Length: 265
Image (cartoon, one colour):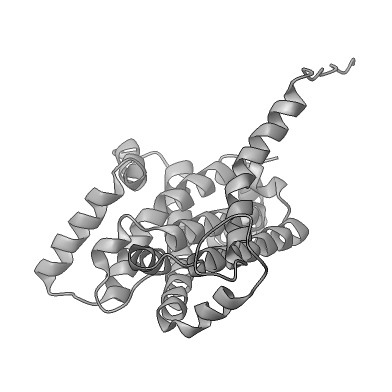
């Protein structure tokens, strides 16, 4: 069987490098500005200083907002992946009236503007007398992260042969054990990918979350509040630390899970 040779266009590499440079340029400018010793955000920096990195620790709002965003991200990812896996099982393995409507409902937060979602939750929680940030934001983040979990796990389940689980049942395994020992290991990488998408979506959400900030603030909302009144490189330093943290996470995931797990290969 002859293998087809794929020829790359001679301009493909330069175009790819140009696109990569355009994407990375804002990050380079931001990281460079974070080392500026003065109060201005200028690039290239007029010297090198860690002054604004230390200033992050001096502002309790950033630390408390970071803790809240991480807690919301982890909890919403856990709940959305668990609920999304159960929903994906029902959608892939069974045929029932209203199946398409259920799938549309689960994925609807993807097409509804964040402003509409945030305002709807604000009105609902105000009517219920709930004026605490954590429980209201937790419910909101589960709603907006659930579609990502459902979509990714559905894609993983559609590639799993039902005959493998049926074979385990024939050999005497109950349905729950057949799922845990046969199907779950196969879709594990998909569930990890779904959890990462859910965490990032929760951690990064600003549009809807800003409506439910009462006694505590998430990190994106806190950053927005800071840049409205201050113009120093503190936010640039904070964002540089976040980029470094994300880079470490990507390297670890590539080492132990594999990036191909997220591309479906």
